[in-house]
Image (tube, rainbow, N blue to C red):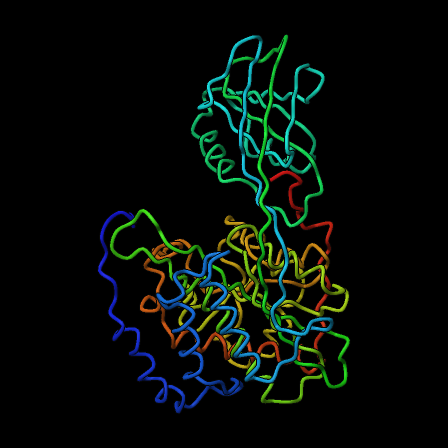
Length: 450
């Protein structure tokens, strides 16, 4: 939907309707093998986390701090403990935003117009006056720009890309992306990629200078722990991301990207699973519940979190991402990313008695979803880390739209998904199920520059 068009906001009365029905749903008999969870508590959590009051929970906003406070309060009420080494559920860390400041390019004594330039740089400043000072790459009409840049990004260092004008459309996508700046958890590798849209393929001379500005900012994960009884050193991690994309400051009418499905639904599931297992009081393994921040801007919450623990102790990661609407397999069903990378999915399905609730393989492999959520960070460390979702990517009209609000969800389907996850992961919790590890060598690494 065009965000500049006025859209009538769904009334709060519509949002309250599930609350009025919550008690009735809670009294409905559950299928055999399903865990008993509270529809009322689930509805209360999702209603607040997806509310206009939190204005889309954008990273660095005061509203995302309000969301963190809410999650922390729920963890306290549930009876979780802070992670070892922390006195609070909140774990703050710094990230660095690197913005392009200036770029001037002259090739063969010809000044290239700024409209035909793009830069991704982690360097405060660079100056290339000789052809040997930088690696030069020619990308022709039939070459794949995305693959070429991915390779350079992985390699790191300093690169000049001469891109044929026929690839202008793809160039403009990268130009727009790079203009937003880069975000880094650490200021380590110093590198730069400059793209010039030009027919030149041979350089006799060049004069290129670029500068960036760096800003340090704080973000916060919210992590609670339910200590294990007999296998306390082994950890089962349940997670989701509580950030979204905020508001459309240039729009009219409804401008709030509530992020009800993405990913208030996942955080709600994580909280309610914590409450369920805390009430059971029989978890052999330590259960860790993490609400990650900054997933939408690069997965920095999970990256910071991964440095706080030994990945060898993490038996599995159940990352819950967008479960608020029925999947293509039916209401209350879910699928998982990367099912072929470990036997976690197979083991979970053995715990689920009813065939109609079995966990399915990711039906959208072309989307590369295994790498598009926080599970990828832990998978790179060998953890059987997978995301669990019900979204229909080929049909969802609400993804990253202001219409992703509470009224767009099917709360009955969402409740059944949470029940399935509680039942399916029971073997992980009681220590009777241990999935195979993911081979880190088979997981693509992240880039050094952008």
